[in-house]
Amino acid sequence: MTNNKRLLYLACVAMIIGLIILGVGYKLQLDKQQAQVVTTTTLQDTKALSKSINVKPDTAVQIQHEIQKVNEPVVSYYVQAPDITNAAKQNQQAINSNSKALPAVVTAKSDRTVVTPNEQKQKVDVYKINLNKAHKIKAGLTVIDDKSYATVGYQAGKFEGMAHFKSDGKLKGATMLYTVAQW
Image (cartoon, rainbow, N blue to C red; front, side, top):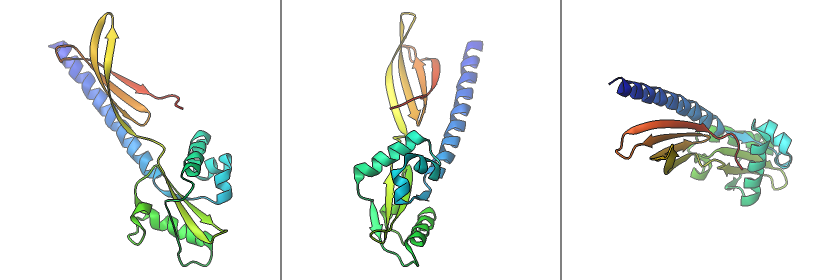
């Protein structure tokens, strides 16, 4: 009976930790979804882009690659404004407030939204960038001391949790992992 209480206690602690991690992840995800105004010259410079949108340099490189890969913004449209910089700021505010006047593709959720004033063509470009495939479900097999256990896992961002089951279906243990590096 005490073994079952211990497993129940460990399961509760793991669930509480998981809920805290999900809450923090949700808050960070909301911050990422806010549109950022970035000039075309800043888009070309990794360090400047990193500082401008408050991301790590390797994430800035990923954003640059995503923008170069699509080569065209998700939408370009014209608005009434005294200059292109003000137009970009107006669009940023409209996107962040989910204005119904904007095209649906502009207010769709994404990892990053970059609003770029295109001064050469006198228009505002909006890039929607998805860097992270956030949720993954995994299945596998764990072998410990010549014993095998069915393993089921869930990954959200860089956090991954796994539950190990005996052949009779009882929970044997759990594992929590964090992705330290990825490429």
